[in-house]
Each structure stands twice: as structure tokens, then as C-alpha cells.
Image 1 (spheres, helix red, strand yellow):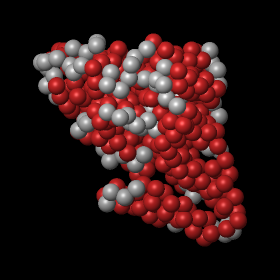
Image 2 (image 1 turned 45 degrees about the vertical axis):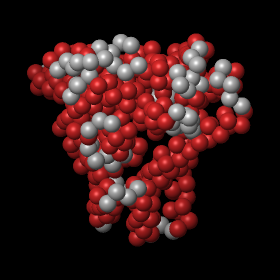
Image 3 (image 1 turned 30 degrees about the vertical axis):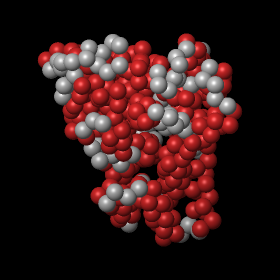
Length: 439
């Protein structure tokens, strides 16, 4: 009955994808389905409601952070922080460096903003526009953009995925970022080498567009526009709590909007809720977005997924799947088991948030310490989800940046990270087995 229940849920997800429906329909259907399973197992309606509520309560902190992220992303757009950084950065792009700089610039913006989708809709759009202008292969450029936007999504202190992993595993985001460095260096350098080499082999021609002129239609740039970004970077280095760091950045953004950009308090309040809306159509196509409203869908997904977690834990729905994963992990290392789970989870969940939660739920009994499991999740579910062509984590950033979905084949960093981890783990396991036999 367990596999039938899970199969029906996977079928609902696939139907939403095939017919273009919102994934929320499948998630609501899944909640009803899992409640029905719980009733079949003898649990009362009150017990099932309590299980679901307890699951949602575990996500309380992350939901509060989503609220702050919505306001932060709107203010960074409205205050001029994002456009100023973009204009300063794009001066580094030349025909033979388009691919490498597309990767590095999207890495930088995604680390600053913590959002893959927001980065793809700003720096991603700019890099793809430049790639087309300079006649660079859009598949290669799309892969560089996708790699870059999820680099920061993985390791930014204000990333929703990093915060979700920390919340699930009970670990500190800052400690997790520090632990990610050893697993990041080799894939990052290899990706830079690949994009640098491909850039010289497929160098385009022409000149990049003048973004200073474009954004000057909407903004009169001033150095103080960098304050919101500087605040969160400095406070993150000082290991100030994430919510406090974001609150200070929000305050700085409000100050810049009022004092430098000349917005009135009512306008600031409106953009905090509904996001930034530029008056110029071309600027709007690159910068519009953010606000509390923009976080509603992902917050609902997290709430429903958290409700699942409470039901799964109490009803034992996933026990047989967990046993299979534990057996697999003994053969290919615990990391290999988490990786295999995240690949299958990404294929059926079709979004990063649900994949993270499903992978955690299925792998939390593998015997790993919480800090180790947190890094395993960062190096699997977070970066594997955008490699699934039909996943929202892939299609949304590709569509918003103007890149073809085929660009997923060139997302080097997203492949190299789990591959390096897996090969390193298997090598250590083999060495340990040889040592045990010789002893």
C-alpha cells in the first residue's frame, strides 16, 4: 500500500507537469492522499491534523526568513543596489570571456541575493543578452548562467535552500557555509577552467550593450546604493544571526530609497509587499520583482512539504523506502545514497524545496551527524534539482534568463560538485576496506 500511495502522488506531480498545471494542485492532492493513508492505518482525523501541524511548526523559522527575503529582494532592486553592482560588473565582459564571466558574475550576484530565480532574472538576463549580442552559443551561455545562479543558492547566508537545510538538520547556516568550502574549491576551479577554455574556443564578436545608459533612465547612481549589500556581507562575516543581518540590510535599503531615491513612505511600503516595479519597460524586464507576495508560493510549498514530513514520520509511510536507501548506502557510501535519493526525488518532486525535504526525510536515519548530513544535502538535492529538465528549478531560471533548456547540459559546476564528492567518498571507502582486509 505504501508504494501505491507514493506512486499516486508521483503520478499527480507528473500530470501537473505534462498538462502545465501548478504543482500546488499535486501537493494538495498529496496531502489528502497521505491523510487517507493515515486513516487506513488507524489514525484519527485529529491525530493526522496534529501530525501535519507539528510538521509545519518545524518550518516556522524558515517562513519568517521568507518574509524578510521578499522585502530584501524588493529593496535591493528599488534602492539601486542590484543595478549598480550589475553595471560595475559587466564592464569585465569581453567576447572571449563571456562564458567565464557569465558564470562568475551570476555566482557573485546569487551569493549576494541568495536567490537563483532572482539572479537569473537580473544578471542571467544580462549575460544571455550579451551572449546573443556577441554571437556566443546560447547553450553554453545558458549552462554557465545556470551553474552560477545555483552556486550562490547553495552557499549564500540568505539563501532559502541553505536556510531550509540548516532548519531541517538543526545546524548553523554559517557553519554549513564554512564546511562547504572544501567540497566547493575543486568543482569551482574546474568549472572556471572549462568555461574559460570554451570561451577562447568559441569567442564571439561585437561589443556588449551599454547598461549604464539603460539603468540611468530609472536611477541616478550614488555610492550609498551599495550600503544594503555591504551591510549583509559585513554582518555575515561577523556571524550575526541571519534574520538580524537581513533586518539591518532592509533598514539600509529603506533609508536609501527614502533619502537617495526620493521615494515616499507609501511607495516603500507598497514595494515591500508587491515588489519593485520600474517605470521604464526595458528596465522593468530585468529588475521587476521581489516583495512579500513573491514568496507566497514557495512558502505554501514549504508548509505542505513540512506537513508531509510530520505524517511520514508518524505513519511509517517511507519505512520501506528508507530500508532500501540504507542498503544502497552501505554499498556506495552514505553520500552516494543521499545523491541517489536526491536524483529520484528531484525527478518526481519537480522542485528544489520539496526535493530537499524528501531527501532529508528519507536519509535522516543513515547514521550521519547533522552537520555532515547538512553538507550532503547541499551537495546533492540543492544542485541536482536544477539538472532535472522538467523541474521548476531548471525551467524557471532558464526561461527568465532567456536561455534554452538544453543549456542544462553545460551546467558544469552542478555536475562536477556531486561527481567529485562521490568519487572522493568511494576512494576513501575502498581505501578503508583494503586496510580492514590487510589488518
